Image (cartoon, rainbow, N blue to C red):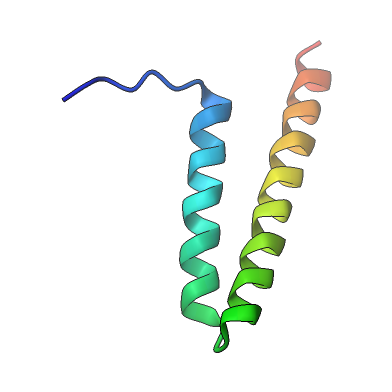
Amino acid sequence: MPKMNLTHFEASLLFALCASIVMGLVTKKTDRERLLYGLYLFGCFLASLIGLGWLMKLGHG
């Protein structure tokens, strides 16, 4: 099996994508609601990732 060398950011994006898909599928009833909710969650994950990354950068100096 080939090794995957992901950066922390890439791994976080992969987690955000997978979590958004799963939560979108299990929480909503119609396909349209699932898609919109999954996209919304992915956007929230992405915004959190970028925001927390900047906070860590500013805190580290």
